Amino acid sequence: MENPFWIPVTASLLAAAVTTAGIFVIRFFEPWGRRNTTYFACFAAGVLISVSFLHIIPTAFAMSTQAPVYLLAGYLAMHFVDRFLSAYVCDKPETAEYAIGLIPLFGIGFHSFIDGIIYSVTFTVSFFTGALAAIGMVLHEFPEGIVTYILLLRGGFSKKAALVLAFIAAAVTTPLGTMLSWPVVSRIGQPTLSALLSLSAGALVYVGATHLLPRTMQEPRRFSLIALLTGTLVALGIIASKL
Image (cartoon, rainbow, N blue to C red; front, top):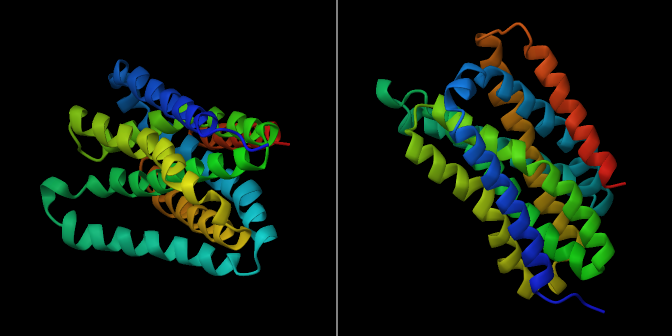
């Protein structure tokens, strides 16, 4: 029996609420967050890279033989966006640091939108399948909100702008993805979902490995490697919760 519309929407709204909680928590501890931006970036890189390689990519590859093409496309798309922002948007001294926050903003926003679609798809299969997927995805929403907000601040955005942009990209996009995909979810086949997952993974790998980690190496901190490993362990916990 197909689950009613309100069930996946409620799950996606819960995910958005958890992300929003992360944003507001770090908002009230901003000085501490600024001092530890490098650690948050390393933690985020560990989560994004590990989840991509250990879960999203294998899942997408199992669905379609064309998945590697879309994985590469997602990675290159983020590279082109990065180059465009650096050359035309962040080319002035007062905006030079914006790319630090904007690139993760795009990558996390797109990934959160795909999460919303996954809610629709999994709850269409069964309530149990959707619930298991929801548990795993909600677990990473809290640190995702924190990281998005902190990196926007680090990129030179005002507190208000960082709060609004982080809320839209990391929180709003998830229920939006669910609501937009639900009417057509029955027509989203495995090849299409595989392509979306691969594009998302390519974007997240770029954000973690090519955008965040090199910048953290420019600002070395004593426990940055521990933060990276902690992010990896959190990702392993998220993946294990879905098994």
